[in-house]
Length: 258
Length: 313
Image 1 (cartoon, each protein chain N blue to C red):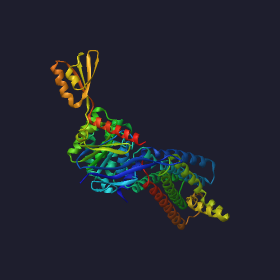
Image 2: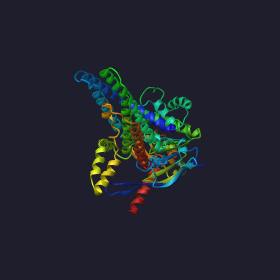
Image 3: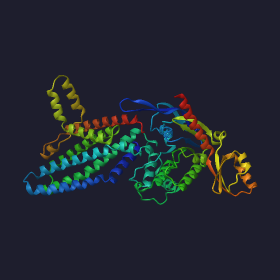
Image 4: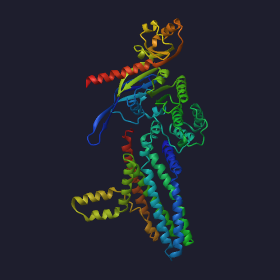
């Protein structure tokens, strides 16, 4: 990887930290501690189920909000504030800037998720008093959540490369919601006929399939996750991320910075 | 080898929401800047100075034309390692300190860590920012940001420096310091290309200037060459109400106000006017330049272009 990409990524991470993005961890910790204590008092035998469900859903939602709200400003804010001028007048290629920004935000989310994961396991230990072998599946769910973040970061960057922050947020959030129901959309497409079927299928496969990356419920119910699913999801997320990033690069390479 | 060769760069923007129409920001521009000179790019606001600089920096793509910088195609990334750029009204990552910002820019320019450690305090001292360690840029004044901008432009010891309105936001002392810095850069063998609409700065500093107006080049050359055909004006004020005949003979426009006389004469007659007042034993109060010869040339070029445009339309 080009050294310039590493420098841009590191600076993006530093920006997120200094803009107090990681303060969300405090809210997350409070939410999970409160939930663990509350669940421990009212439920019998389903403490683990509730804590895993709640914890992983919170990890996902907190991360998605961060990915969208930072991602949409990664390029547009730099253009608006003209901080980009002194970066691109150096030997930095435009694609390096986009890729560096992506890795910076992705790195921020990985660090954030790491600390949240500690919180989830802490809460689980509090309510269940011990770990079981099936709890290792939580790591797989967390891995899929990170894959989900990669796609959202790339999409937010794509929208940020040609649109205003507000519109980018709307586009990215809409795709997140639609993508969460991608399996249903594919099911609906299969029921239709003619031109509608063609359009519905195209739309169903074009939106990111977040439903396949959501294994929270399966993990909470201790259902096994196969190695094939992990490989498929990894390949899918990396491919989708690469496509979205390539789109962002293609647009940004041609953009006049007025 | 010229430092900059602009070969017909031009820019047309499409404006309007529904019905897009072309708006030409820069007519085909041909310009050469030699190595080691201080070159002033002059023009009123909206003349096309910043558009030209942005095209040279690769921030805006030209509609047509090309350029060569330091003998290489201007899009060559290697070129960018050898140039420094200060944008107009610069804004930086305000969560960083000046040291962190320069370290980041140094990394992007490929300056080794050991050199950065040595160069950063050096350039900050050079622009007069010695006591800013630990202070985030969001707490900097406009003038301090401008100085930071100059520091980042020269940090990597570039051969060619582009400054867009470098005196903007600076107090008179700061302007003096920047002028000195630009002269030092020239003495170090660097080429300085700067845009400004403050003509006195250009006249004091530049080996050559180009004048641009409404996206069109109006004149280019050494200041003395350009101003040979025009004269500046000076204002002479003396005590009393007497207007000597010799002053009138110089063609001075004289106005008596109270017990002083104010006369406006051309720059070349300044010495003759002083001699005339001395002969009459009149007490001279002040001689003030009203319009430098470059200003006179500049105004003439702008008026000429407006007249031409009027006739054409």
